[in-house]
Amino acid sequence: MADKNYAFETRAIHAGADSSNAEHALNPPIFMTSSFTFDNIEAAEAVMSFKSNDYVYTRGNNPTLRLFENRIASLENGTGAVAFASGMAAISNVLFSLLKPGDELLLHRTLYGSSYSFISSLLKNYGISLRLADFTNLKELEKYFGPNTKAMFFETPSNPNMDIIDIKKLTELAKARNVKTVADNTFASPFFQRPLDFGTDIVVHSATKYLCGHGDVLAGVAVARDEDYLNKLKFGYMCEFGGVLSPFNAWLVLRGMKTLPLRMKQHEENAMAVANFLDKHKNIARVMYPGLENFKGHEVARKQMSGYGAIISFELKGSLHDAKKLLNKCRLFKLAVSLGDCESLIQLPAAMTHRAYDRESLKAFGLSESMIRLSVGLENKNDILAELEGMLG
Ligand SMILES: Cc1ncc(COP(=O)(O)O)c(C=O)c1O
Image (cartoon, rainbow, N blue to C red; front, side, top):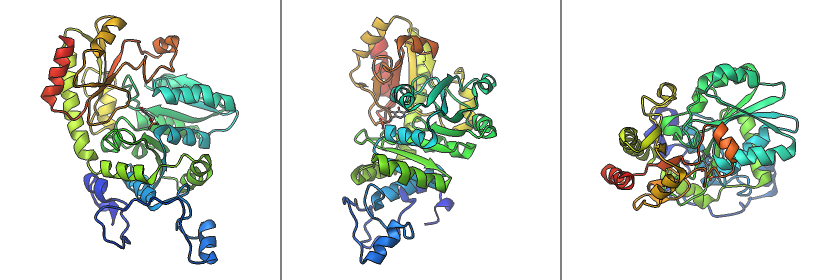
């Protein structure tokens, strides 16, 4: 299939499909096998020495995983991808692949809690230092580059406060200094934003979220354009650390990705209605959603995204106690971590997903203990609004 000639929606269903499907199954088989056999030792040697692209062992490759990797590479406009057992496996492997002792990682100040603790606690043990900066302030950012800065990592929109980072301008700054950029594109999904098009070197995803879309899988992936780098990441890191994705989970994500465009459109329509509702509500102090014109990152988001996604964070006019009381009132919404599922999920980041940030850091990074994060689901918009009305009074 000449993938490039087809639109995103078509590629979400067909890209990367192998025409050698001998049984002509409409849907790809799940290759639940650890090993692959060879007709003779010459064939084995050809694969082991990378002269052939056949399969050896699922920790190195597997047809179901390869299909998932090719499909997501097509949707992100990359040349290839490496699948991982989770988003954190993708992030940790990518950062290990770019950094060595003595190097410094430049990091946007808000990001997913486990990414923050991996970088601030674990990477440090390997002699890799971390410098936090506000990537939304590009003028100031120049000052943060040092002689040992080797990579930059950010999410846009960021988790949980929806900071929007100008990807093109940021990667220009990085490239001028020979610094690699890694963007976590989980919140936007490739349907709304493709960071590689703006110059980012590597895109990572928690495929657990929108790519899968049904809350029944853990999966991760890294996408890039540099084939040498992709080979290094796959065989030098994923394969050696061993955080390989299960073929069954790859198959479930492939199934979810077929409806990614439809789901994202509906998620966003519901989220826009929720953001407008919250923005006008008397008990709400602040709404963080890039689709709102009064939101700080709106103009940059409009430039680099084709839609604003469906994660909304907000602050009540009230205390932490009031925020907790509100969460205990939900009936339709589920009180849970994670996001991007069909179900609307609500949570308190400071107490749940972002517990790794100590109280001081929360304040310094513009987060508060009472901020609530809502992943707007695919339920009927009116039921979602009625739930909020019931909770907020
Ligand atoms: C933005 C972001 N990146 C990465 C992750 C980690 O993904 P996983 O839970 O699949 O390891 C998460 C999880 O919530 C996330 O929100």
